Amino acid sequence: MSAVVVQDLVKRYGTLSAIDGIDFEVASGTCFGSLGPNGAGKTTLIRILTGLVKPTSGKAIVAGWDVSKKPDAVRGAIGVVSQAMTTDLDLSGRENLDIYARYYSVPSKERRERIAYLLDRVELSDRAKDLVATYSGGMRRRLEIARGLIHKPKILFLDEPTIGLDPQSRRTVWDLLHQFLQDEHLTIFLTTHYMDEADFLCDRIAIIDRGKIKIMDSPALLKESIPGDDIVEIVTVARQDGMVNPPLAEVVAELSAHNFVEQIIQKEEGPYTEGDATESHHLQVYVSNAAEAIPVLMSSLQKQSLKVQSIGLKQCSLEDVFIHYTGRSIRAEEGHKVNFFIGAGVPRRMGG
Image (cartoon, rainbow, N blue to C red; front, side, top):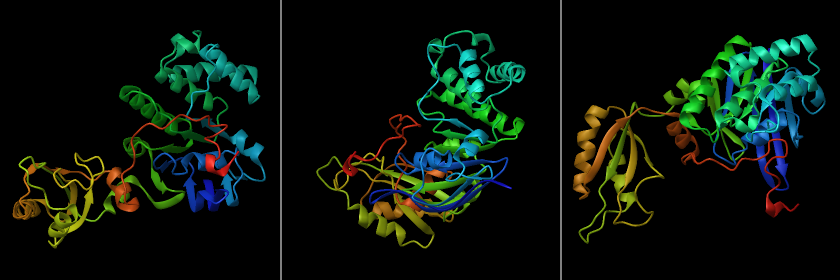
């Protein structure tokens, strides 16, 4: 049985479509990732699935319940870890878990055993009596994951679970979630804009952009869907001799003329200024055979009087998948933390 079933789901704020007619299913016991930049619709989707927001149209079935018709039943069957940290700073770690367990009416004996078990699993047993105000960001996030699991939910929803954490803390959270996925017989629904996070945790990923699902598959098959066996990354030298480099369109046209070139993408974070011909070009060239392609590409660049600052091979990543299907790079900046239970609100131009 599928843990989540979504059919033609739409959420509009006036004329703005935050979710624009999406369909998918999440198999029980798997980790499903919703991957996209800030503003793609990920948080709106997860708030609909957890019963906090009603869809404009369409259907969402979570843990066997229609979210629009039985939101309370859905909330009893799920755990939620929101973007913003919501544990009470003035309580201890154990007290935070105890209050949440009481909210879900977990019996006293089971509550004590469950709290002890989860504190041990998230490696906070020795800090259980300390105020959460004394915890690091990584410790608070681990406590919030434990809190989301206190009532043994069928599905755990995680909205940007590692945003704001340092790399070591992020990896610790990943390992913890991977273990819980196996040991708790959970289904995990994850939203993130971190490519490596989705790649590590998810069995299937839906790439979402502007409220639509662009493509959905396993991380491996998503990467295999990109044309070209190899990616050649080229950075040309900026001109400092009074001359100008040829326009980017001419460079792309010259390189694309070779039959081994499948696709060329201009890197947004490249060291150039759009329209400034004195600056360098930063390109990713998707080719069928890098060993044969690189010498020919170098020759083509030399014919255009372009000097190469660097050239290298890279493996296809989910970032490349996102660029291919959306036409732009995902923004890796950390978005502002919103209160999951309130959300980012209706856009200003919509009023309110």
